[in-house]
Length: 118
Image 1 (spheres, rainbow, N blue to C red):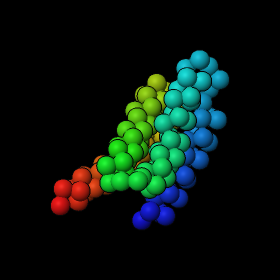
Image 2 (cartoon, rainbow, N blue to C red):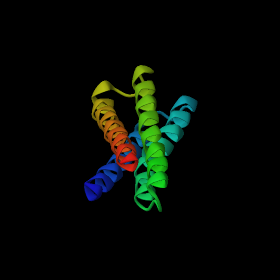
Image 3 (tube, rainbow, N blue to C red):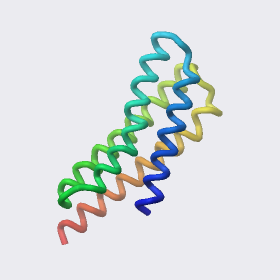
């Protein structure tokens, strides 16, 4: 699963980068683009960092950052769609993936916490 998630989060980051190139060259487009590139690409980077955690507590802490970034990306995708900047057809698969990643990392945190108490 580790290798799959590394590939999945990297593929997601690349799709976010492609999306940002489609945003309008307006103040809103630039600002939303900066925000979503930061959060959408940091999911994979922080997941890799979590895998190198030196302790269970550090792993959980870093994984919590991944979860926050995934959820923040959901927010930016919703804002981009609801503002009418990009069509629903373009946003929908990215939104679905961001929600799934958030759920996966939430479950991983819950399981890691449960396992650390055992």
